Amino acid sequence: MGRIGPTELLIILLIVVLLFGARRLPEIAHAIGRSGREFRKGLEGSGEGERAAGGDAEPESPPGDGSARK
Image (cartoon, rainbow, N blue to C red):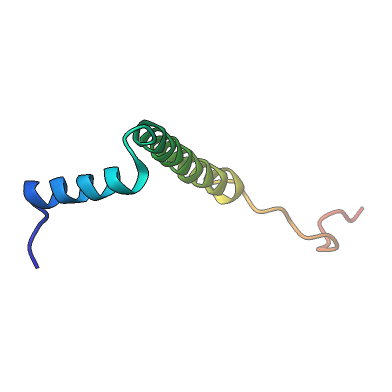
């Protein structure tokens, strides 16, 4: 199976226009772009959370390990 060429892209675009109409295409494109940005923000946020939660920080000692004896 080969790559999608310009003819195939034109056919796909024509089908999309027929399904949704020319008026709704800008709205759909805007929604897809917004979804992509939110997805990337979510991926970046999850990576920062992992680094902050378990990165280079020393683990806390569990209670009752004997380090607080007098």
